[in-house]
Length: 412
Image (cartoon, rainbow, N blue to C red; front, side, top):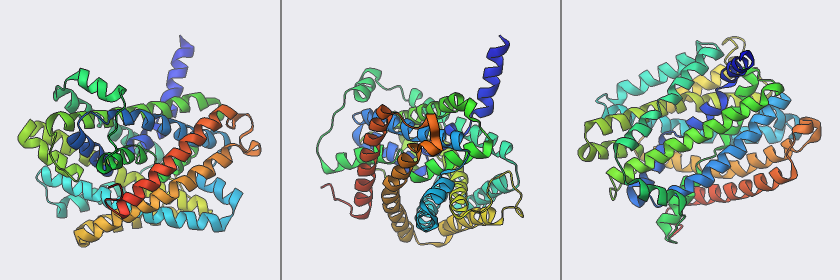
């Protein structure tokens, strides 16, 4: 009995990086994709979440394993094994892509708060101040606990899906019976649903926080449970977002997660709209905290600077300075940049992410197969075949998604 309690205590000590990094994937842009899929295509594309789940688990597990075994972040390993020049250009691309995505998160905060009755000119500055204070003025443990609580709030979407009272036999058919009409809009949506599941920043953030938390190789099995469990929770939330919109607002044309929350009110009542808007606010705040943090970790690792939320501002000025700058630019752009510019920035961020993802995944595969780094924990041949196939598919889908973002209508 004592051994079981010790294992349980160890698990809760390890819990965090996998659940948080996977949860942030359900950000404002992700919620928008799932909402649009449900509203425009009903339950028919639910099956795409299963391959998306497999891809997320495999890629995240490799990043977690490298962090536990090497005790170093992915940025560190790339710099040490491939040189500073490659690291510099990779960091440059990640800064641009993550900055544009951070702008989208503050746009999500603005949309959610306006639905809840608070103007963006108050909500966005308050949101920016909160996420800055949370990370800069607290040590790792309080920050992680806050992120874990924010991840738990995603249960609101599950409640919303259950209250929608769908025909569960039809829902299960959509989830378990793959179907695809080879039309441009439907193909583009499948690419969006699967291709947005794994983002380049996730691998850097997950590995860095595992190192920052000091998780040892003897606790690797517990860290693996954290990663796999986080992936399941994330796709479960996505599942219920699709179900809610497919049940409540089928046939409604929406463009953003905020549109979905607003569309629910006349159909499903104030409760559903408020729940959806509050979930969007939570998701956007969480992502607005994590994305600049992931960027600061990545860049400081790649350039060899001190980093981590356990350090004070004066001990890691580059880390906290970059984090602060990303928040200021991300939040300020929502108040100052014309809407047309923001849309273009978001499109270009998708292009950059689409280009970076296959590059980052190739680095991950090369590094995790180096015996000098991973020893007995390197990939098996079977795992390499599975991971390699996922890398190729995810890379192709991300590049296709980038092309569709840059050239709308590319799929017909």
